[in-house]
Image (cartoon, rainbow, N blue to C red; front, side):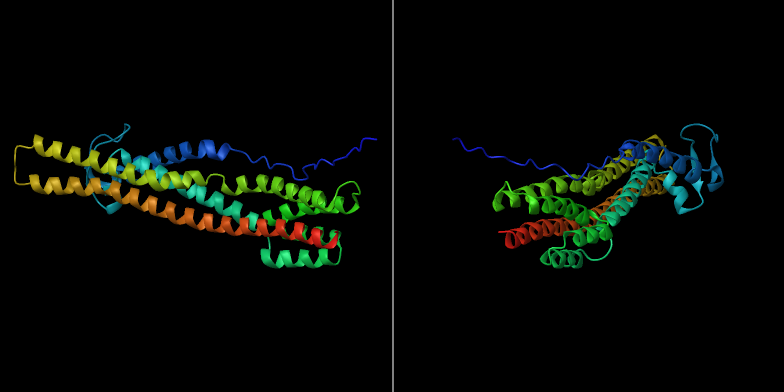
Length: 284
């Protein structure tokens, strides 16, 4: 008589979180528009200059700035792009901070795992599930998914202990695969801005210096030529300052967030190890 083996196919107990991608799509464009408005109507306001051309137009000609912020306007058309890039960086920093703070949950993950271990050692799975509800973070979500499969495997009489442990481990891996993308989402914007902002700033500086030297070449060689050249170069260097500053902040926050994510990932890995090892030791 042929022996038949029945296998329980694990069902995913964690549903994928369908977070909207709208912010990722429209935020950069809105920030660029906001950057232009700040540059054109804020920094480039006629009251900030001693003289200038017509007030209307896409890029009004201004002269004699009254403050350092007004001089940023004279840095050229790349300045609003840099301002928009900075605003984009701030937007995604706020978004990532809120998401990762929520994913960390309440309390310390190590304390949470110890509480779950204690409940499982007493074979009180429901109390362990209650601890997951209190944690309210990614570690708790993964642990809860594994505990549901853990509870199913306790009463399962068809699989061996090794097969049950594998089923629990697979459930934890599936839950982890749903949590990690949510944690890492939009970090690519920060890493891109970290390298791109400096290049945009250098581009703005080069364009500004081309304009400065072009103006010098058009001058007839008066006594003010050197002074005008130095002013033009200083205005162009505002692009470099904005680019480097934006890049520095992007790198700093990117490293902060990746460190926090590594901590959450470690807690998730530890929770999966706890479930499999506890089951293997208690239900041999």
